[in-house]
Image (cartoon, rainbow, N blue to C red; front, side, top):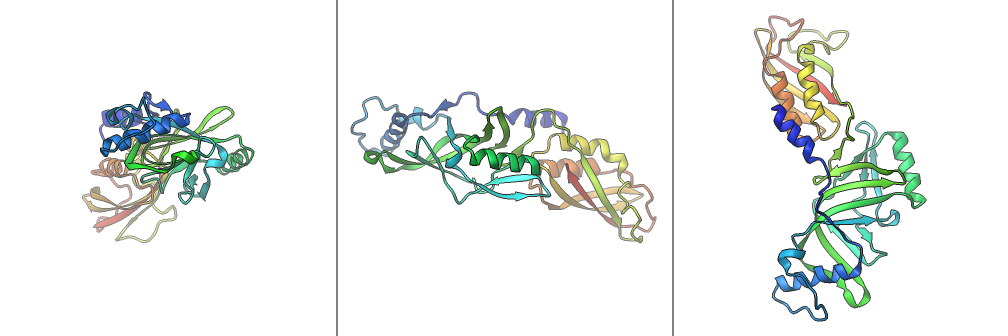
Length: 283
């Protein structure tokens, strides 16, 4: 992956700067009125409703209190804590239920110690979730007379906030975002060729010549996770590498890894080798 592209990807991992804080029921009424206007329906009782071109294209920032969201599974190997997608987000003292599209796999980077700390802070009402989104769908649901609103939204950013500020974030696809300055690397745990017996160290040093290029991929990686790469061997070099398993679900990093390995010299290669596999992990 070109260095400029990696820099652009890293720069994109910030919350939107032009978001409007969604803090009052009156704003919900204006958004619902904009939906009705979009559908050609009258908007009774709303005298200051903006046009749908304004209200429905804006980015909103919503703070969800501790009791308005739930954590799901914790993945030990990836050190990721999920939001529970079966619980919709509730905010504004229960007046708003927010359904976010494609938000079934939102996760935050968390060590086991952080997971326990955040779970305790949430239980004590000291952890909140801030969501940046655009309204989506065809209309509002709920009952305005009963002060109950339900919106659909397209997410742009998620962040967990504690007493000391932001503790973790995830991007529009729900992928964990690394904190600035965090050091990441690609660990090669195994390199096996089809012509030799397994080595005592599983051949993990056979691709050491590509380590610097792999680490540059890690710096732009969107999440931790393991990969398995299959490749051909020609004249002691990696040819046509292909990612055959990507637990990180990160296409950009997978592409970067294959580019980093293509043409790399393989140490201690058997002349009869024709194919090989490498097991790696972004950490």
